[in-house]
Amino acid sequence: MAGTKKTDSKKGKKDKGESGPKKAEITVILNEQEATKIVQNSKVITVHELARQTGVKVSAANVFLKDALKKGIIKRVGGFSGHYIYQPATS
Picture: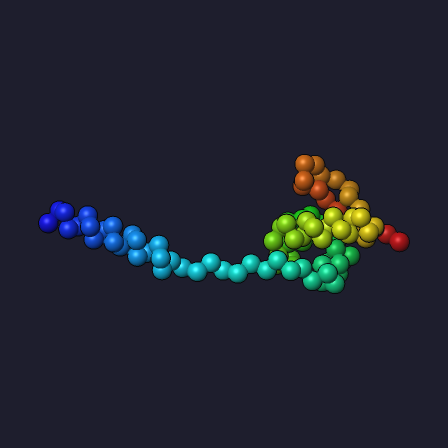
């Protein structure tokens, strides 16, 4: 009997892996107009805050903020080692 229990548990583990739960989809496309509006209406913003508000990955928000920094839409006002704080550039 002990031998059959071990075999059953192995089968159960194998079946579980094949029919596991599906992962949720993560949005990676950032709506530029929405992100620009959020940045302009904020006193300061971080990569994580922008990602949370727009519902995208942190990497997508980081790409947007780096692009906006190059275009002069925002300026970096603080932070260090990748955790920067950005502020809308005043015209």
